[in-house]
Length: 117
Image (cartoon, rainbow, N blue to C red; front, side):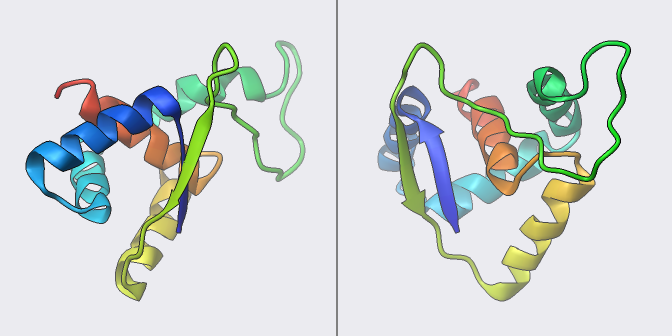
């Protein structure tokens, strides 16, 4: 599964990975499990600007594009490998929590988790 993070968030993730010796999937799963209750609110705030304008309404089932780049910050993409069962869980979870994409869920979880480290 591809994961794309802003360079600053990727640096925090890599530092935490190096400090703990944990794998990318384990850090991701821990981040999601630790912050599962607050993720829907974080995701809702992240897509606020990507939904219909005030006075409008969403009519179509389309992905809401959310950019996590700020001020031209570079992004990095890496691949995590998970088993089929965990992939199915992640595929259902991002939709259940109202994320516009699987990557948006990952970004929200990493941001919440790594902000406390």
